[in-house]
Length: 145
Image 1 (spheres, helix red, strand yellow):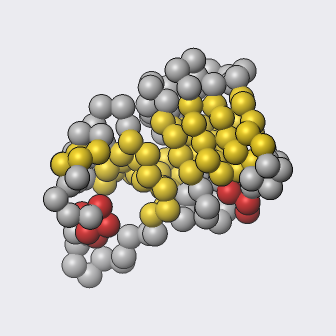
Image 2 (cartoon, rainbow, N blue to C red; image 1 turned 30 degrees about the vertical axis):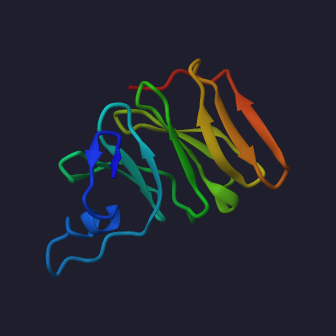
């Protein structure tokens, strides 16, 4: 199986589990994944911690989202490497994480935000499942680097 330049010979959870040292606390539960431009993937855990999984199977912490229960969460990555996270029904927001790890809240009080996509022009689309609609966000402030 190959994804975003990663040639995985075993399931991703086994690769990630193998990163821990014997006797260490278990890694958090990963709940969302998004391929990065080039190589690697972003992984989000249920605590709102964003990690980069490199082609060499290294897990690198990138950012921490505001405190909350991250479940039913989705991510999408823009061509410039900016990651967008829809936070599900508990938090009801949309976050942008710059390639350097700066986190911005770009939408709040969404109706159970779920699926998310970014088009070529940089517009962000998010499904508000509780309201049965797709919201398009086009006038986003510039992402900090």
